[in-house]
Image (cartoon, rainbow, N blue to C red; front, side, top):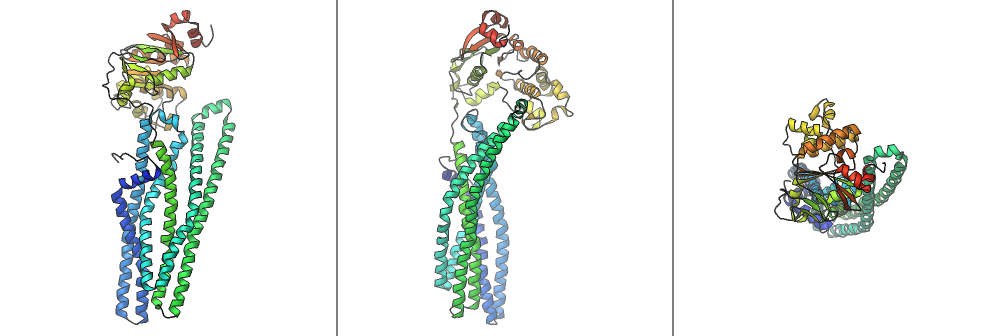
Length: 559
């Protein structure tokens, strides 16, 4: 959808109702076709019974007429069945991918707030299973509505033919629905527990994959594999508990309609022997009894799928109900010559200069970068105006924070580096040169047109870091904040990056959070942060002589 709409996330039922209303036309059309499809099947036993009575009466004209009716009902079922299925698939896809759209849009809106509030597994589970359950909940409405109408139609026909047999069906169907009801509550609860465990397991898997190299380096693979195996078994046991209830539900779908069929057939046979109904009506009653298995199973299936859809919608609503920590205002944005200042730490990033921030604790540097980039709340001003009052979209456009948590996505390398899609080969080459990443591209057979795998896993940690740096430089924002941009490269490469970085950002406002002496020595101005506040500032060489804390931080405690 160009615009999936604004979801109603006040509760799972409200969300499912919103999804249904958003695709009301195809949903209603599909329901209408499903009703015709089921009615086409429901009329077959009646037509067949009339044809049998025509044979008994040796009335060839009536026999031909009812045979034609049977043929027409077969054509009706074929046409409406095909169209119903097409609308069912459309409805499933529409519901599922509308959920994907609103969830992804919300994830982008939340930004840095999302990983603070929800685990990776909880978010991944929406795409892994929940969208399918929501799609199933919408799709079953088509067949469920048709099944309900067909049961009513058959009941009316039975009562019109034989009141006792009609009442057996009329009373038996609600009783069967009531008998299934007690199974739905434990099924709902166990499915919810299983979903939570699946989310936790997905989070564990994501953490292991992300840190696999580190785990191998420290020999922690077996420990984490054991933990994953333990959690996986918990998910399996939860799945078995769900399956135990589902198996009872499946059994009920066979047993209960079977009991009803046996009662209807037994009574019909006695009525036929007594002459109260004709042989054709007996065949019709048996046909109706057999036919009722399908709509009754469909209603039970509807209860199951709607229950699962409710559980899935609850997880989706949990994501959609979150609010971002940073919302932004509507004041006019103007970076201009303004100084970016963090009131909590006293860090000032002056326009047009390369400022370096060395922190005694890496967490302090990250916290300052998050506040300056509007990824965390704080007393931050730009040119004297509170950053929180400026439109967030424009803040993101003009202030870019590049850290080592940034990802390389799958696709052409050119597209990965030039995210705006406006740079030519010369500009890309300049950014690669500044990041000392030309050798990476040169080693690829297709060069910039080479395909990058998910997360850039074909590149080493140092190569990924240099490509991320090239991407940040190519974005060319008015204010660029980088966090440890050279932590994964060797000293020779780091020296070249330090030398080229200032030239690449000449005239632009830049803050580099680092404790690398090579980078600090090239900065126009250096700030030393300890305990979350600025303790000293000046040139790198001057600070080495005047600030023991700074000297200890950048020399790793070595004199």
